[in-house]
Each structure stands twice: as C-alpha cells, then as structure tokens.
Length: 527
Ligand code: SF4
Ligand code: SF4
Ligand code: SF4
View 1 (cartoon, rainbow, N blue to C red):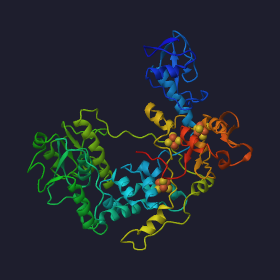
View 2: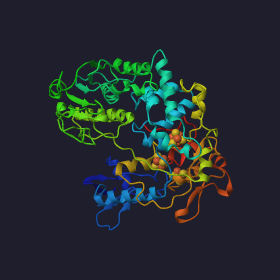
View 3: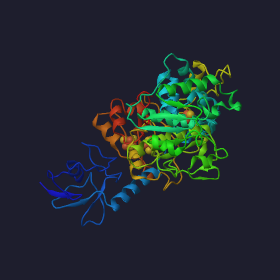
View 4: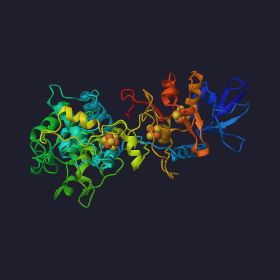
C-alpha cells in the first residue's frame, strides 16, 4: 500500500491505484474531461495534470500510478497555467455557441431560445417564468425595447430575424390577462430595509429582485404614481397606460411600499434615507438641473459616478443605476441595471465581496456561411417572419407558435452540464486565445433521439468505448489523423445505426455538447 502526499496531506492507497484515485480519497478535486470511471484512461485532454516533485514534466493524474513517497502538488501556478493551456487548446478547435447570440446581447441576459421553445410547445406558464427570471417588466419592454437581440439574431442572416420582442410581449400579455398572473417566489422577510429613489423602470426592477430576496423595499418618487418615464407622452401610443399599471401593480403586490410626492433633496435627503434604511438604490432616471447637488453623491458630466462592477456610489451603502449613471439611455439597460444592482446590494448586506453577476463563459460560432445556413435550418420552419394579423394587438397564439417555429435554437443543448464550459469558466480560459480558421458547422440529425455535432467533440473516445462495450453492431470509431481526427460511424453507416442501444449512455458520458438529446424537454438549459 503506497503512501504519498498530495497538497501536503498524507494518503495511503491500494497498489496500482492512480494519483486521481488517491486525490479522491483525500477529497481533493482534480478536473477531468476525457476520463470516466471504469474505462481506460486516454489521457487526451490533459486537464488533470499535476506536479510530482522531482519530475520535470507534469503528469496526468488519471493515468499515472501512485507511487510510494510521491509528493504531489495539484494547485501550484504551473499546474493552473497548464490546465488553462489545455482548455484553450481544446477551445481553439471548438465550434459552438454556449448561449444563443440573442441572449448574449440582451442586457438582461434573458434565456431567449428557451422562451421560444416553450412558446413553440404551448407551455406559456413556463415561458413567463423564464422571462420573469430576468425581466421585471416584460409587457412594457415588449412594446418599447429597441430590440438589440433581434439585430444579432442568426435567423436574420438567412431572411428575417425572429420577432423576439413580439413573442415576449405575447407571453407577457397572456399572463397579465390571466386571473392569476405569474408572481415569483419571495424568500421570507429578512428584516433589512432598502430605500429606492425613483419609481421608474430601474427602481421598479431593483425592487422586484430585492423583494424576492426578502428585503423590504420602499420606493420614493416625486410623482403620485409609479412608472417614471413610462408615462412620457411620446410612449403613449405604443405603451397603453393599462399595461404599465398592471405590471407595476404586480410588483406592488410582492410587498413594495410607495412614498409618493417625495422629492429627494427637499422632502427627504439621501443622508436621512441612509439613517433609516440599510441601503439605498438611486434609479431615478436622467439627472435634472440641481439633482447633482441635491443627491450629495459624486457626479461627473451630468451622471452619478458609480463603480461599474458594483454600482456603488461615493456614499457608503448608496448604489445607483439606470439613466442616472449613463449617457446612452435604454430602458432595457435601466431594467438590467436594477436587476444587477439588486445582486450587489444583496451581496453588500450579506457581507459578501461585491461583484455584479458573474459573466458566464461563452464560445461563439460567429458569422455562418451559405452552406451552414442549411444545417441551421434543418429543424426550423422555412417560412419568412410571421406578421401579426392585428398589428395593435400583437401575436395571437397560433401566430406566436408559428414565429417560434422559425428559431434556429443556436444555444448549446448541454450549456448547463458541459464540462468544457464549466472548467473554462472556473479557470478563466479564453475561448479565442488560439483561434485560427474554424471548422464548418455540421449537425448529424439522423438518429431519432440524438444530435451529433463534430465541432464540439474533444476526441475523448468515451462514446467509442461505450458503444463497443454495449455490443453495438457498427458502433463508432476515430477517422482521420492529427488535428483532423474525428469520431464517425464506420463503413459510412448512419448515427442511427451506430447507436441503437448505447445512445443514452454515450450522451451522458460525452463531456461536451457533441452528443446531446434532440428532444427539447431533455435539452438542458442554463440556469
Ligand atoms: S459544448 Fe460546451 S463549450 Fe461547446 S458550445 Fe456547448 S456548452 Fe459551450
Ligand atoms: S435564431 Fe433563435 S436562438 Fe438563434 S439568435 Fe435568433 S432567436 Fe436566438
Ligand atoms: S462525441 Fe464522443 S469522443 Fe467526442 S467528446 Fe463526446 S464522448 Fe468524447
């Protein structure tokens, strides 16, 4: 029984066991991608490398046998850099979008492809939950958003972008008209109080997310009704008063208090709010003459100065977002600020390190070729954009389902359980570090349940071994050499013939989205 130390901890392990086994015995986590218990170690991904004292080269923990007296380091800088290098090398030849281009540019980071799938399946209750996870005022934004998502929608490269905004509006309108509109679950009241200055989109959004975390929220506004700039005359034609009233009322129902006709600087000061509340969020919209002085926070060029990572102003416990902090004014950005600032205020009041929501790792395919357009269209409706029969009323259910059918579902089917993405996020790997010429986008869809995307394969070989072990007649094999090596079905047979019974096991073992289930119910989505 060899004895060794890993990260200065001693461990005794059975003869013939690997360094990975020994680390697991000590509950030391070593990342692996190509390794699977019970299978031969292929040591192809090189993510599990560790430093063994006395050896010049790092060794892969999954394949190296633990020896008596070994001194192993799994966390030193050399190991960390080698793992980043291994990930960046894998990413250099990787082709996929973790998130759809639409979601990446949405300031609220709403999961648009998921919403569209839910609409397509007639699951409107799930669709509104998807929307309201990130957007407090979807019926409002569904009418006035400048739609940055549609500008980058991949379908737009083929014919017309998906009418994302109208689809969102459709779901939000159906919900608002129902007898029990969607309300998020709120944590029990935690006793901490937050003052929100300004009852416009940003303030309302901050309140919506803070109430869910159990904070008591009181909104102060100089007007006698909530909504702020949503009441401006120019918006009236596009944004009916009833929509604003109903969406605001839903937030009030979560327990938000409203102090009307309270102008900050005259009726009440920020300093007073600081005394009576645990934190303050200024989401009052564009600063007017005199506001800079009245607020008492640092300003520059007509905007409140905030730390871009945390939304903190120059005053302790006072945060700000929306049109008050930026020159380029977008309602959807103001709503996104409210959501992100709520995260920061919660971190601040829970004594955690302040940083806005972590940017999720993402790889991108980028622009697609004529040939690739066909591959993307494989599962989509080829019709052009569906126009609502009644422009004023927006989509009816049939029209919304028709438009949803046009989506190319650019997001990855394994976005929330892909090991490559998870480790790339954890180690801060850069997806484009070694990017050269990319491979073409290919999808193999002939299997009844499974999609194979070679561009996402890391050549770990697990599916080949599993298929052979399960006694598949044709199974899978590697073809090609060097960088061109690929998993394929021998004898020119199809994926359906290759994986007649081992499909599920292969999908579960595949560390990336290369092998994934087709069915959108089994498709995994980012949280
Ligand atoms: S396989 Fe992983 S890294 Fe690649 S697109 Fe999918 S989630 Fe992103
Ligand atoms: S086709 Fe669908 S998933 Fe792709 S960018 Fe457009 S809306 Fe998003
Ligand atoms: S398709 Fe097969 S070889 Fe490629 S990453 Fe998935 S399991 Fe590994």
